[in-house]
Length: 160
Image (cartoon, rainbow, N blue to C red; front, side, top):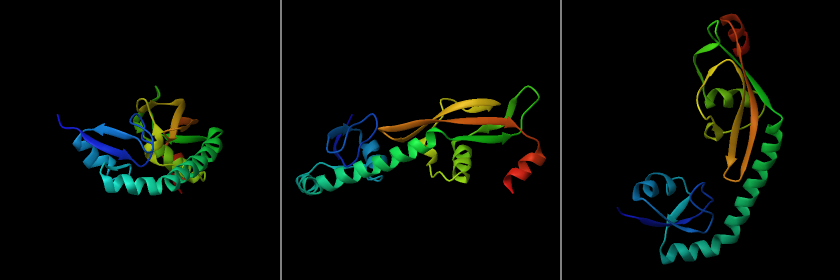
């Protein structure tokens, strides 16, 4: 199996940190790491460019982490209530997705990417759930998600 060496331009969970040279499969490099701006190929020109940009990239990474830590602290006390259609036994028609949670957080003034919401399994029952929000490889928090039963009228009032 072919291996590609890449220089990481950002911290990548379960792979490495900024400035580290890592070995990955060509598909992972070509389809994810390079297009997302997380890494670049290892060659003399890129190594020289990285050394010149290293301080700026490290400062930018620290600034991003600092902003996300503030957001994590604000989110820590947050909760969102999702009104869902359910059976009498409490089983949802469908499930609560990260997108649903992000929509409710946005209504409360929090800008969170749906990819940051970590659900161990889909939420398919009424109840109170602790949901992990992974804002950065080094920054995570938990929020409470209340999934409550609502009829069509309550759902219509909530969306207006």
